[in-house]
Image: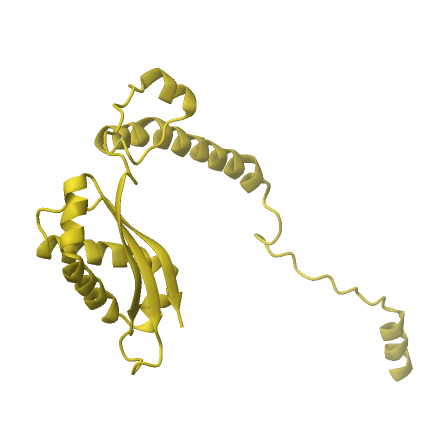
Length: 187
């Protein structure tokens, strides 16, 4: 009897294991057919809203923030009046100032020559007559700066503004167009 049971068990074919199919796993065709075109339509809608509505409002409020293309510039631009300010006509030079930068204990030096561009000859004569006052103002501003500031090339614009402001306090009648650094040597 036991033998028959074993034969029946042996004669039974073994079932293959088939993993259960889980719904939601795999590529969903609906996403491809519906989702991608809807996404593209949304992108197009956002582009047209931005280009036609928002940019026209920005042009009305801040015209300098939006650059027009060259065709629009030619059609809508008005000729600008020529600037009457002529740069470089009256320049007063201050040559070879030696300045000790802040916190260097005299071990580091700045050798600088500056040119002051002024609009009139009277302003140039004013700077010439007050040369000592001018040099003192430059030394005051520049000696208050450390090596990190003076060594930074982009900081020179800040130096120009600070020197111009200081001279504006000392000589309010003199108008300075710009300041040129003809020599700027850190050692």
